[in-house]
Structure formats: structure tokens, C-alpha cells
Image 1 (spheres, rainbow, N blue to C red):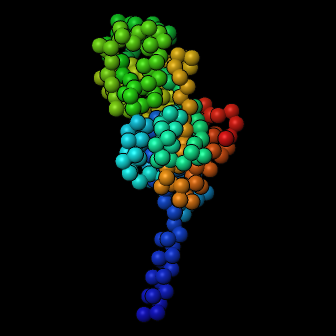
Image 2: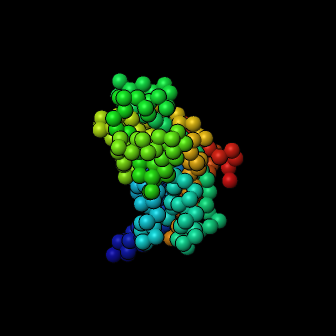
Length: 253
């Protein structure tokens, strides 16, 4: 009986000592977050990581309605700032961790893609996929790009709107769209690498896709969440983002 009792106590303490972090991550991070998580777990095997992927706007709505997330990784800085303003995130934890790159990607062999404007105007461009501009920063950047090129109104009939950047990529990969504005990190991922062709969108055609991390109010009291945020800014993680097709802030915040 005593042996059983001691075993129970040790087991209980082990469970209590094990940390857990629930992360809300923007859809462009769907492949990159797995690499970051694996690197983090090598240093903190005692911490469990749970990741939920969705558009940044959708995740903000979930957080404001009480979803149990500790860390929010957004595709921009606007959404984390909105959470801070509404009292759902910790102001001094807001940190830029990567800079996204928008690309035009196609799997249609008949669509020339050497010049961005030429591709968008080509007769072979019947359907163009973008993420939803109202909830996905990459979708907003796609709209801004088309507006900068004076093509937003002209291409309205051809637009196929995805819930997030991953769905926009699915439209292109399945052939339901001839091309799509998606994240460079997706076309460089193991899933899509080598498929189709892509061209980078000049950064001056849209607002910067500086991605920000923030602790939610729930995460503020979670030491494991703070450990993850610190690791997110490490030199090791910066190299991961660079390999995955992101720019990184000039110097660690």
C-alpha cells in the first residue's frame, strides 16, 4: 500500500511539473511551426506544445471569445496590437519575429510568369486565388498589390477567395485557380517545393508583412509560454525562419 501511495505522489508531481503551451498560429506558418516546435522540444522536452492553425483574423476572434491560447503568432502586427488594445494580450510581449514574402504561384504550364503584370493580364489567367483580405494579412497584401497595379477592379470576376493562405494555395494546387498570391514559405515547404513556378511580389507594392508574436492574458501566467516566446527570438529560430523563406528582423528585439 505504501509503495502504491509513493508511486501515485511521484506520478502526480511529474504531471504538475510538465508545462503546456497552446499556440494560435497564422496559416502561413503551417509548415514552419512544426520545425520550430521540434527545435524547441529538444531544449524543453518537458513542455507539451499544442498548435491551432487558422487565419490571423479568425484566431483573434477566437481569443477575444475566450479560446484557451497562450501565445498568438500573427501574420502581421495589426492583429496582436488589436488584442492588446482590447485587453486580451500583454503589451510588453509584442515582438516581431519574421517578415513574410508574398509570391504569385502557378501550376498552369500555359501561364507565363516571368513578369508579374503580364501574368495577371494573360488570357490564360481565368481564376486567381487570394486569401480573404478582411481576415488574412497575406490576402490584404494581395489586394494592396492588385490596387497598386491598378488591377483590383478588373480582376474581381476572376478572384477565388480562400479562408486563409493555405486554402488559397489549395485552390492553385488542385487546378481550381490558375495562379494565386500565397506565402513564399508555402512554396518552399516540403509539400509544395518543386511544384509549379512562382515569382516574388515586389515588397513596395504592399504593406510589409512583419509578423508579430504576443502573449495572451492566459499566457502571461504560463512560464512555459514565456519560454516559448524567448525561444522564438533565439538565433537558432531566426535561422529556421530564414531557411523557410522568411526575412527576419535586422536584430533580435
